[in-house]
Image (cartoon, rainbow, N blue to C red; front, side, top):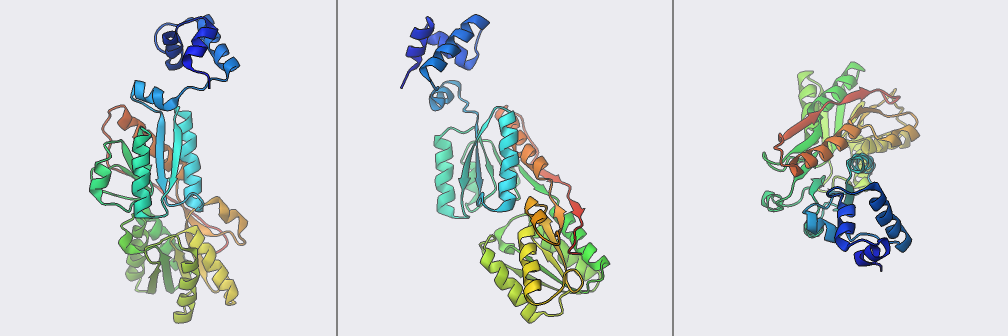
Length: 325
């Protein structure tokens, strides 16, 4: 493979000058920069990014650890994070943890060894001290790891309140919520808290069901919905912890001959694009995914620049009514 010395020889300059061109340091004439870039192109030379990051103590790479990119919410959010990072001159190094503690730990070690400038976390399986020991700019979304680590999330409590209030206004009197396990210590549990508060406030019957420690087990959703209709056939309003769970609720109703929205009304959460493929479209609480993605990147960059940032960043949600209510 061609080296920086080969580029220097072909361009008729020193290796130091080529390095200055690559890092845009000092005064350089346009003619000289053109010569160096032309030599790089003719030799098909690609700079060693790791070596460059060592020399300038900056890699322009951000690590992102999420449960799995195949999950619609995380896929869409990753797209927004990558797009904004790219606009700011950064690349993204993506890791899927599958909520596995060992895997998450290995990815953190790998990201540190790759000298990333910061890490965005959408997965949280380790003890707090493990995150503090990273000694890197860190931002989480939908997870509050500790009071001193910045996090970004949608207003989960307000979202749960909006969803439950809509079901009540539509005449539902036997409510159900299906979501992730409350002991997972994720901020989305506030959706369930709001659901219960609103049901109690209106003196309505309600039931809550949750998955085990794997909040993204699609088979578990089907089992929970089967359990719900078997044990509580009177349920006429479902607030699902995600649009995916809402889609499974819609499927379960059709399987059992329950009409939506005539017999059962359903509200989801997230506002994923996949909703447009469903008939009827699911009523949802839309998270501002683009704004969340942009803010996580901005908070990393602010820390890279030595700025202090606030811990809590809670963004507003919107009720978007579809055909399931």
